[in-house]
Length: 274
Image 1 (cartoon, helix red, strand yellow):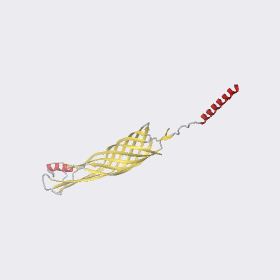
Image 2 (cartoon, one colour; image 1 turned 45 degrees about the vertical axis):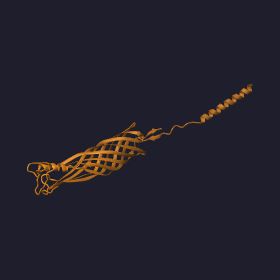
Image 3 (cartoon, one colour; image 1 turned 30 degrees about the vertical axis):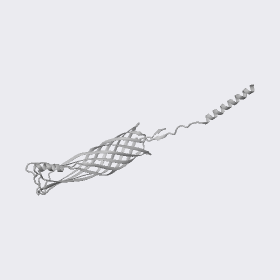
Image 4 (cartoon, one colour; image 1 turned 180 degrees about the horizontal axis):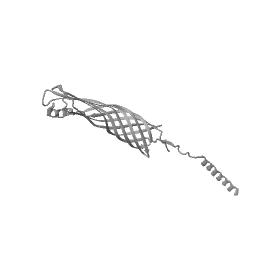
């Protein structure tokens, strides 16, 4: 009987030892840490897209005593001189900026300079109310070759790689306007030119996706308002100069921009994630 019990105990102990050995042979590795993209750092990039916008050039004149125009002509010139120009075209240029990531928020400062390509003209002719059938014509042209912006950005991370942001700041461009007035009453001529580096404002929305190794792709929309600039002239000529007759020319410019781009970020910390 004792021998039988000893044999059973040996079998039980042997089985337990085998199971313990099997358990010791199995283990689980810790998960491999993968680097998460961090948005902090200086970056440069390029962009290309399209712009569509409008300008509203205006030409008016006054009615001083003993000058050229009748009062009704002054009113008519102001009406015909209120013109509208639409423009659309391709835009593109270069970007540089710096981001600070704080948890899931990203704050940044960005500047860019782009070919703008705003260009258009308008012309209208009307009868002199006082003196039909003689007519007068007002011509206007507006252009802006380049556009620069300096903007703040504030965004949040939808995922570690997806940044959604709002942006706004200053918009700067050289706005050019050319104006002329002619008539058939006395072959009158007058002209004016505007060359004004305007500082306006811009605001918009965008999204940027980090593809890794410092590279990211973005798409954004910007609205630009450069405000209104004006000038006066006293060069009306009807065979003789009439410097008492003052003309005022002005122009504003607004535009919508949609563009895509690629950025490259230099350095910056990498945060480990599981």
